[in-house]
Length: 217
Image (cartoon, rainbow, N blue to C red; front, side, top):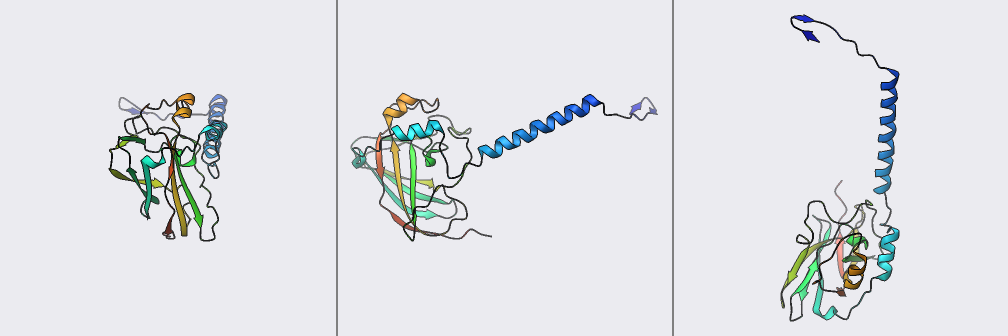
């Protein structure tokens, strides 16, 4: 330390109180790391008690399926997604939602259900993921999630396959979109208030054979 033109050395000693405080902070950091690891180590997208109840009450009502046609067009290796075509076959506009964080795992409405089977016909389970879900921090609700398809029109969306990164090979993939307005209105879905003008129902695409290349090493 310099005072005027004189330089003095200052020795800082560690008191018992300072050592105890540092030790306490180390304990806090360790516990925080364990909590984060636990939250981000949910194997296979296991639902919480809330989402388990949500899935139990949501109906896959296909009575409106004729209004909305889904087609899996291709697999996109750059994004590890499937490209899905949403087509409005009705005479009125159809309002849909992009997926919330967790929609692919059935944690939040709408459900973006990507069903995959391998070459042996065995179902491919969902991959593990972080336990934090809901609305994205960089998106405004509901404006940034809602999209509308006019009668006779169509649009294409990338949909996450929600599987482990190491997955590769030939697969049959099918996509189902489900939104139950009755359940969404009654549950508020973890505090999320849904718009009232959304298309309600469940509809699925025909299966498509895709090839997922091995990840780059």
